[in-house]
Image 1: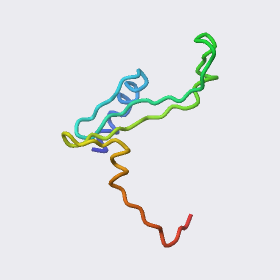
Image 2: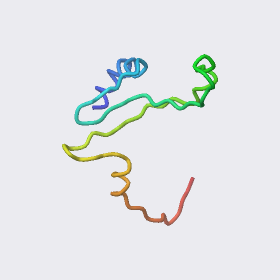
Image 3: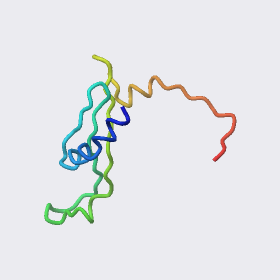
Length: 87
């Protein structure tokens, strides 16, 4: 799987840069997520001044009928205090 993704990474990035979603059957969907601040008007909005971040978002694909949103996933997570932490 890693080799396939590495082979097609340029195509995947190109599609994401064109604001397209990339669905990989059985795995999930990739999309671009932008963070920005507001502007008083469309004319005042610029990429340099208002876009504060851009990230690739991955949404896993579940089995049919299975909801894999982060809220549902977190319900299945259990946490326990670590005995020690070493940075």
